[in-house]
Amino acid sequence: MEDPILTLPEVAVLLKVAEKTVYTMAQTGQIPAFKVRGQWRFKRDDIERWIDEQKAAVKGNLGKDAPNV
Image (cartoon, rainbow, N blue to C red; front, side):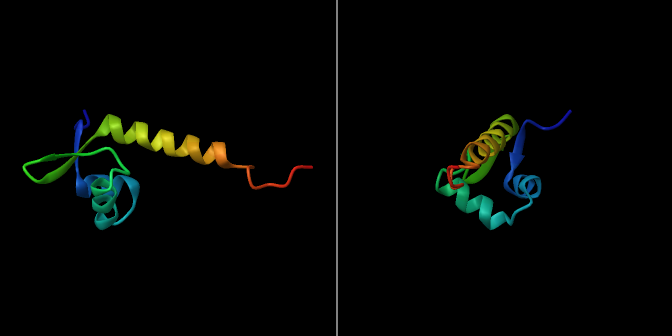
């Protein structure tokens, strides 16, 4: 069973980005996160939902810049 709580390095690996990127995103509220004694933690379900929302947003924006024919 996968751990329901992820650390910052684990999220960075999952998203294939630098740890600093995840840190900045957490600080600015761009990604769902919470702190435990000053250390960022992430609920796996929240991250998976956030990924799905990002995919849907990209999908929804596809074609908006395309000229109307």
